[in-house]
Amino acid sequence: MTARRRPAWTPARLGVYAFLACAALFFLLPLYVMLVTSFKSMDEIRLGNLFAWPASATVEPWRAAWSEVCTGVSCEGIRVGFWNSVAIVVPSTIVPILIGAVNGYALSFWRPRGAEWLFALLMLGAFIPVQVMIYPLVKLLAMAGLFSSLAGIVVVHVIFSMPVMTLLFRNYYAAVPAELFKAARIDGGGFWRIFVQLMLPMSAPIVIVAAIMQVTGVWNDYILGLVFAGREHLPMTVQLNNVINTTTGERLYNVNMAATILTSLVPLGVYFVSGRWFVRGITAGAVKG
Image 1 (cartoon, rainbow, N blue to C red):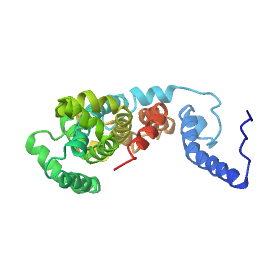
Image 2: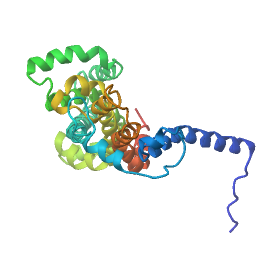
Image 3: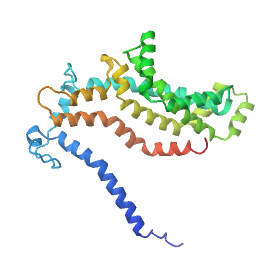
Image 4: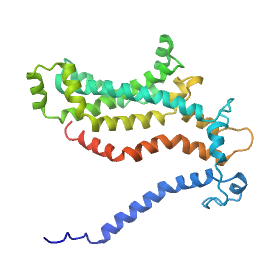
């Protein structure tokens, strides 16, 4: 048995690795600056050594960002926004995935009357700018008594996520062999029984993809949270904007950097933990559409 031959270091391969290294440096350098700045004191920051490692690292900016920094008139840190974001993200992820899975399942196998038109309308909604629909949604939620409430912002996120969630699950279920569905029908399975006992257990890869997309999308959202959440439920991104753009007193760059990193920890953690599942689920749902 011959040993596997190692690939040669051709100029093309070297060029690809050089490009990837430059791209990684381009994206990681700002993160490095934010991280080292967040551990510096303001006296050290004023020295202007942007890339220097902290001479005397301190976690005080992180503590202040979490529990003391002012976000408008409130000085309770961005921890309030963190828990507001958690309260928004959890239902805004679970509900759209469940509805999108049912929609994709129905559009793939049951083909109700007008299914193609319904799917076309859902896809059309995916390309309409959010800003175009803000005012009508404000009026509708106000009439329903949901404006500036937790339920209202969750409803808005569910509405805007429906086209993408439906597309993901429809493409994934379209790649499932039709024989499995027909066998389940012959065995007497109905709509919900086939969905719960057959389709959902097979949907783990695409559910992970949908969860990653929805968690990061809702967590990073700013405009919808600002308009629909109300003062009592402002997400972390809105409070971060209030922290960084404050015009009173000294601008604390170390606290601002710590607050920014705290705000981005959840999406970064999701991608680092579930990145390989994301790629696997996307490719599984792209076989047939």
